[in-house]
Length: 170
Image (cartoon, rainbow, N blue to C red):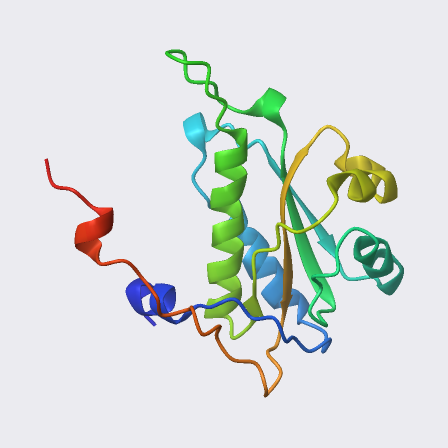
């Protein structure tokens, strides 16, 4: 599948099976995340892979948006490790982590898996339950798995502004 087709077909999946995801697919997702570009190649991101049932329960204390998955990638950024633009002091750590998260979603889709970007969570609870997350700006949780047969794209999935509305040639 070429990238444009992948980008158009990937959608948020909120009905996932807890069927275990093969370790080689998890590794490929992590390698795609590792390949993500970051500002000045600082790589301020950290990815926590959660699949142990006890840890999934701890994750569920922080969000209701687990969608039946048995595998989760939590992505965080360490602002102390991010590149800072000199002209205005803008720290790019969170942007870098968002790029990593996007790579996770596209890699999962390319492997026949599905996911969605979850921003609805309480980072304080995650940091309490997973002390290794302290010091990171937690960007997103990605439940990953095989779609259930009744899963379908949101009715809003195809709603896109025209290219002429989002791009301007100067």
